[in-house]
Image (cartoon, rainbow, N blue to C red; front, side, top):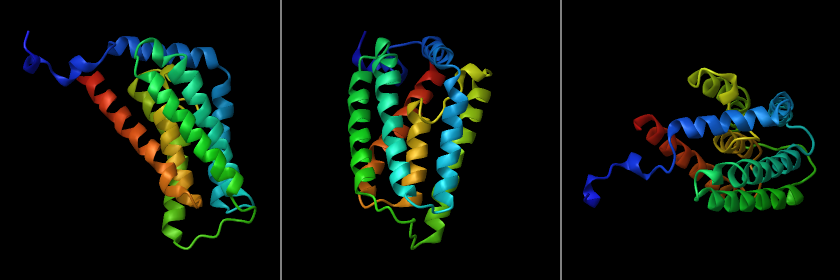
Length: 198
């Protein structure tokens, strides 16, 4: 077989059924944490929308915990069993967690001051979409609530929530805080496309 006969879908190390079953078992093992994680995501978006005191610090600290859990709980312990590259994703998630923790420690304790109102509103809506809309869409697409991908538990939803909250709060280090979420979304979209073509 020649190298040019390979298609992009041949790069996947697992079948679609294997991946979705992994997500279902992961969600089943984490139950009943999903409602609490969903509530935290909505509460963060609400607090940031109100420009509450320490909203920037709280958002960055919560996101740091979310990325740490996704790196360890999903990518290292689960996804790495079917994809050797997941260990590198877990390491990147750990780095993102550290960057967010530094941003949380350096954030001012004052309420958020926003120069551009549109960016703040867009960030809040993106965060709400990540917290509420993304799990609904993934559950509907998979025809099962066990396939719902929640921010704080799964990579792409966490990346969307991060982009929304960083856009809304604009910490000083915001450019470095959006690189990995954007890469995570690109990799997730590519993987979904490959899963759909297999």
